[in-house]
Length: 81
Length: 462
Image (cartoon, each protein chain N blue to C red):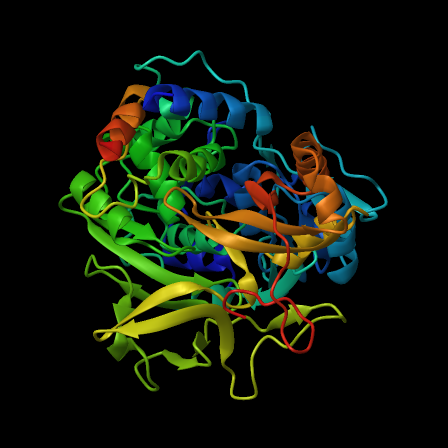
């Protein structure tokens, strides 16, 4: 499964678990307007660390916090390489 | 100490300061001839009052009006479940509840019920102080029911600048709810300083809140590191250009400090250590995670700090008086030190926070006691025991995870769908009774858990 589809699946799964209505995801969707809250993102980041083996937020150096879904995917795509 | 209102009224006429909520903006000067508590204001004199509103704006108005008038006021957090509200009322000997019209409380909670409204009722108001009002804050207790922490205006406000010092220059705001310690600090600084305060509203988008703060020209703004990460992820962080950015309530890691420095190149960026019980201990403005070791030691000003058994202990005039209620622990030791429960490690002349003693988990500034979550999981007859612990997380500081030992581990292992459905049942049970941040984000089945020689669970940091 690609990084993008792994992330996509986690967004959908966590939205269901957290009982949140997820906006249809595209690269331009603002993360904070996707229907998910901070706790949902925290869970997604933890699960992605397990499935992809990276946590780009805790990597050394300055973290550019992602704003859109596209930023989020890119952050992981770069980290996984 | 003078009441909030007296402090304001002594300084200048008209009374300075304002609250900017999502639903309305109210100048504090309006309270000279009108009340948010209608004609019932006098009926609250000398009472023990629960301030149980959802909106921060109504709570802010009630706090200003009740300080000096009520004998005691209890700052109920908006997420307080109704059954806990009843126990809080009993512990605080509350005989009155202040609420919003839309959310009338059960009459059994307190006999006298007074609605608070953002539309002020004009009429004569007597702002004479007849009480040194006790301020009661809620903090999470081990088994779900909150603990009640007794403060005074003096212990809460400490050396917050008084009205007149820089009035009119500062505009304050906070991502916190003002009913929590970190938010209350900002509320008091704004009110006592005669400055405007921009209040957030439940459900308001971070971007919209930042736009309101920007419109009010916010100069001083605070939040937890998790609040700030959310602001940075909103893409709207740079709508505001504050002079002062404050972080507290959680460990401020280097990544969030660096990112805030990037967003606000000229701002003072301070991370503070404070707790509901211990009060404000220190602020660090050097942009580095942790704090300098020189801060530890006695006689370094108004706050004494020491490290004992690996945790930070604080003694100061900002410390709470005591816990309310019969069945509670002692807040401070015989020497007046409060054990914050925060473990620290010394590395190269600097102390770094290393989680909490007793396995307490800090999720975005909210404490989770593992026992409370374990009790829910252990209630399932298929579970032998469980361990709930923190997993570090770059968004919320930490999230809750659970390791579960089954009664019949071998039996369940025959069938992985059995595992999955059991996991589903356990998490479902947690979701039914616990707020979202306490529900394990991951649950795994383990063959065994480590026990101490005395048969207790080995907890990280215990």
